[in-house]
Image 1 (spheres, chains in turn blue, cyan):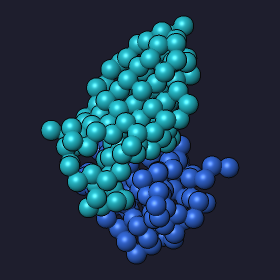
Image 2 (image 1 turned 90 degrees about the vertical axis):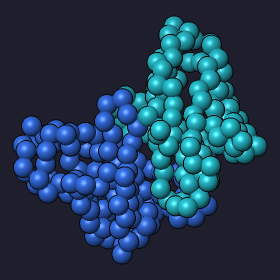
Image 3 (image 1 turned 180 degrees about the vertical axis):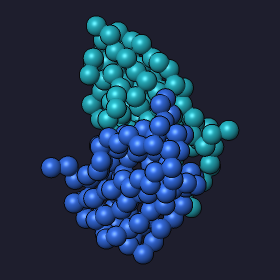
Image 4 (image 1 turned 45 degrees about the vertical axis):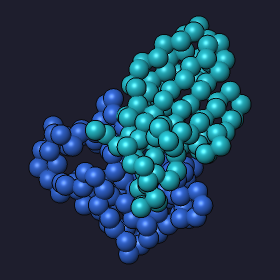
Length: 114
Length: 111
């Protein structure tokens, strides 16, 4: 089983619909992240959380919200999806120790907004 | 100007070739540096960290030049399986948890 699990893996929805992407991890890491990747581009940070009570905006948080339900769970919501939110979304985790830079990614959630 | 810039390529090289990628970063207060590998439609995976003294892992060598604000990745004796996109990642001192990714360099190794 994957250490970082994302659901759903693929989703097609319509403009205006509310969408939730879920992420759970078994690595015991405190830090969790949501990234977005568009074709030919690197990953851009949407939100990140260093522990259950900590939520921080990344560089492209507009139109998104998150919830850290537990140490192991971090969900991303699109309240009213729009076509330019069509992208590949990755959840990632890291520990808060010496190796804070090493990110462990889920397999990605491919979202299409029509 | 982007915080982290990479030559997107593509780099098309024959098997056995040596290829090098550079990545420049704009924030001089950057703390940590990494190279990730991403296969098509898959999640990125850590290839190697980049240390100030440079480091080597088999056919892969990473270097850091703080004065010129760039890191490099050298791949020797390229294999078909090295074909992927290589992402440069930089973390600033001010926010150790906030990684900034380059857009990636695509490598295709041909027989």
